[in-house]
Length: 207
Image (cartoon, rainbow, N blue to C red; front, top):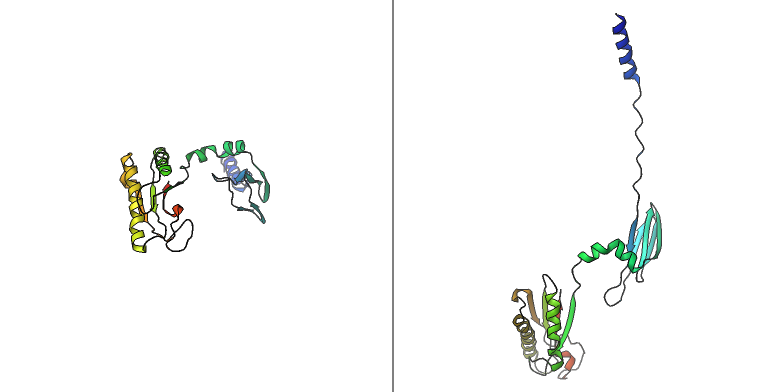
């Protein structure tokens, strides 16, 4: 064997016996998980349980917050509106507007709105107009004066009257759903044949 061949053989043996380099350590991904309980439009707040490892905390006050920066460690505190805006502003802005409901009242035995409720129609239209793809549900109701059958018909007639008024203002008909509940779902429970003005109504939900 020549000296050159022996040198190559020795190099191959050394390369074959050399241990591979140890793998580079993998850094743990950093965490900064934040959960904040927000109040609804009326200021009411529910409750939310947050769990991390074996620790559980219940958030039940406005802007109560839970944060995880390290595995297994749950920190509880309170976030400010500015902190919520900074952390979740883009997501909150992308949410569709929350549903809004309106109550309108009718004259006894008729499908004509009371003068006060006539003024609410424009408010409903303005709410509909600010939504890109509105869905409107109109449900008519009556008091307990008259028969069940006649009140079923009157409640539907009131809902349809409200629908027609919105269509005249430019709301697409295919965006509106109507139904009549008759005297079955009173706002104010009464005995039969009691003329309760608050039960002669339509409920308009815009979402």
